[in-house]
Structures are given as structure tokens and as C-alpha cells.
Length: 236
Ligand SMILES: [Zn+2]
Image (tube, rainbow, N blue to C red; front, side):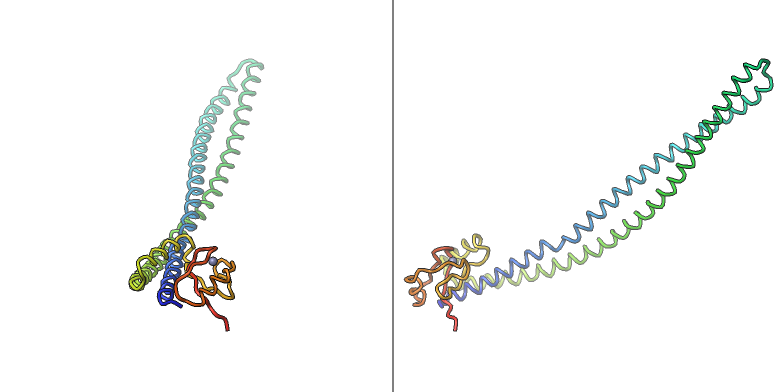
């Protein structure tokens, strides 16, 4: 194999490693993003529960006020009852008294229902608050982990980039630019072995004449199908 090709294979190894590290780096915050999404949804639920509890607490105060006012009216009506002269007036007021009593019984029922809902909401709010706290704790730990992973990957990237520069110096500029051009278009695999006349990258046959030329190893050749730089690999 030509010396320059052997260097390109080393360069390709570095580039594949760099690609892998960059993929790891971009997927490192994935779990953190999931946790942040879960936290947001719990916080939204908490907001809704707090809104609901505020709303029904206000409703409870209103119903209690109405109950008190109607209770006062009931007392007055009951006092007035004994002073009435005619049976008709008595019956009319008695009917009104019954209606007030009925309406206030309904208010008492509503207040009880609201109190039950408040108690249930308070339980749910307490539960959500615990979950929110838990998520915040997990997020703090995960942020720390992601930062450590990223720092370690960045250090590897620096080392590999330096190594890449050093290796590149031993390759002619025209071959290097051909390599870089193919690298972006062939997913980092630029140099491919040809075994038994077949390109290992695209699995296409190399024409016999070209294959014979390849075996002579006099110059760097390219695969006619995928344009990758090829070399002959003999299998024993
Ligand atoms: Zn090929």
C-alpha cells in the first residue's frame, strides 16, 4: 500500500473517532432535556391545581356570606311570623321561610362539597410539590454529570484535533483536499479496501483491468462506483 494511503487511513481513524465523540456530546444532554420537560409538565399541573383551589376557596367565602345573610333574614322572618294577623299572610311568610331554609341547606351542602374538594386538592398539591422538588434535585445532579461528560469529551476532541493536524502534515495538499471533499460526502469513510475485486465500502465490483492496476500499487486509485480511495487487501 502506498505510504500516503496508510497515513490517510490513520487520518480516517481519527475522523471516525471525532465523529463518534461529537455524537456522544450532542446526545449527552438528552436525559437532562427529558427531566426538564417532566418538570415543566409537573409545574403546569401545579399551577392548574393552585388556580382551582383559589377559585373554589373564593366560591366558598361567597356561599358562606350568602348563608349568613339569609340566616339573618330567616331570623327576622321567624320573629315577624307571630305578629301576623291573617292566615293568608302567615302562610305566605311560612312559605318564604321554608324556601330560605331549603336554599341554606343547599348552601351547606355546597360548602361541604367544596371543603372535600379543597382537601383533595391540597393532597394533590402536596404530592406535586414533592415531585417538583425531586425533579429539581435530579436536574441539578444531571447538569453536573452532563458538564463533566462534555468536559471530558472536549478534552478528547482537543487531543484528536492536534493529532489530526500532525498527521495531515504528511499528506500532500491535493490529496488532503480530495480526502476532505470525500469525507463530508461519504460519511467519514474515504479509504476503502478492495478484496477479491470488490470495494468493501460500496460492495461494487472493480473492473479487472483497474484491479490489476491496483495490485501493482503504483498510484492511488479511486473506486469507479463510490469514488473512494482504494487499496488492495489480500485475504490469506
Ligand atoms: Zn466503492
